[in-house]
Image (cartoon, rainbow, N blue to C red; front, side):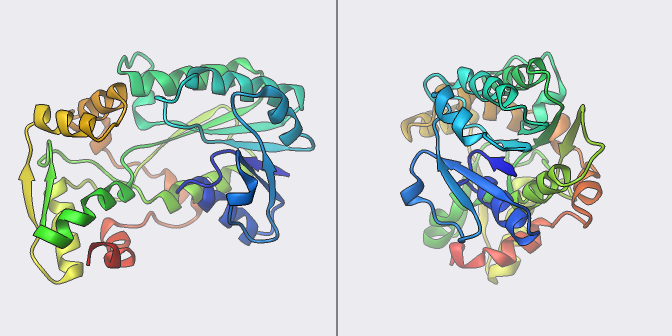
Length: 284
């Protein structure tokens, strides 16, 4: 049995679906089972990352765990990994696969977003349970935040629009997780994950425009303006500052392409163009 936390999000729900398709017994953890929408094959259990007792019950009989934690800005978020790791150790779970972030490749990273995930990785290591970390960079689904301005104005407003990153489809992250959860030999490994090509935002929008059959213009917003706008939209301040730091790292790790999707998922990573074609209706 595999337990998936964060099971209703864009990555967790894909992990649940792909495990189910592979005929693997899967249990989905959620605070509100009645609101969850899974196929009948999925066992849905109630649990809260702040409540170790609920986690112990959810982990009963679990062999492997996929740990996807909430945004680090959540109150008490730094204790969630400890709660889950301790409950997993008590349940004698055999393997934890934790979703982390690409910037955690640098163990000295100081921005709060990365520090949150590095703390989580430490808690998992300290549990004594065999572990694997998956470290993706930018998600292709981040582009969905452009949908309204693309539809209404034919433009995208972003800071650091010239800097290249190698965005990854969340479905590919899930496929890597499933590959690790259903095979051996990944213990003690941390895999950086990326899409198959490094693209800046202008190039991503060119792909999207070709799929939509119309031109999309890009406005390169000053970082301080973008920061103020994101804070006004009630994003946590530490998350905003962390994301801006990574977006502005012109020659850093987020622009690198890694081979691990094909290695772990058994197929090539999807391109941004393929993702855009599948999600074109969101921008029309």
